[in-house]
Image (tube, rainbow, N blue to C red; front, side):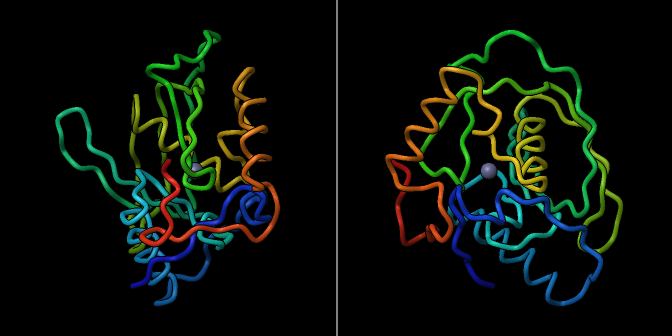
Length: 188
Ligand code: ZN
């Protein structure tokens, strides 16, 4: 297993629709193992393959549900059904999101409270999960990555302008900028 460097916004792979996984081989198994290890080291609650520079439709997630039970898995070639999204402004107390590809930053974003994700896992077993709250948010965030969308692309004002400013100030928003979990500390 290996920790992989995480691409920062501006890297073309993050802004491109990822391709369906068609070949289930040892290389794919290694990729998914590396994704778990990279997510754990970062640490993050989810990671999509494009974030480590691989344009394939895979994400992993690791979340503790309301009962404190860990919920962890990979979803390959996911399909996402998304519930309604309220017109209310996002709460800066309860609806703040972050992304390992915009490291150390957080902005409020309204998301649907309910989703259903279907797909398959590494062993080609069906995945079918209904989620609400934070897990629903994680699934929406990771699924977006597979379509070349970052959460900062979805922000309303004033957060959209704030995000653009931060990305410019940090000299992100161009190809070739990455960080390495465990080596670089970008969480401040
Ligand atoms: Zn992200």
